[in-house]
Length: 93
Figure 1: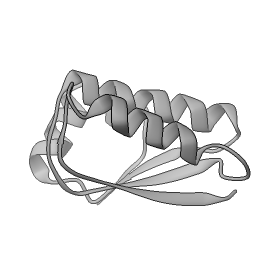
Figure 2 (figure 1 turned 60 degrees about the horizontal axis):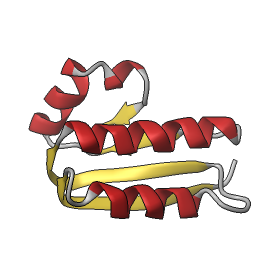
Figure 3 (figure 1 turned 90 degrees about the vertical axis):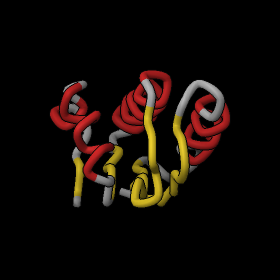
Figure 4 (figure 1 turned 180 degrees about the vertical axis):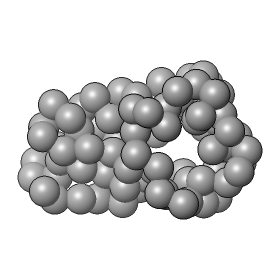
């Protein structure tokens, strides 16, 4: 398993989602099949942002890898749990 790290900061919402979705898809080209996404500086995630995480997780799974969410802030953890993402994508504090 080859893992890349991607850092999100600020807001992951409708305005920023297309950029991050494209960047995450580009990471999964070639030998990389897993991504650790650092959420330590992410302040806000919308439903559009959750979709980006889900699309990345599905793409990684299709390549035999996975996405892991690292160090989310408490408010982000709450959003991830309410939406059920904690059952789909591993979260490491």
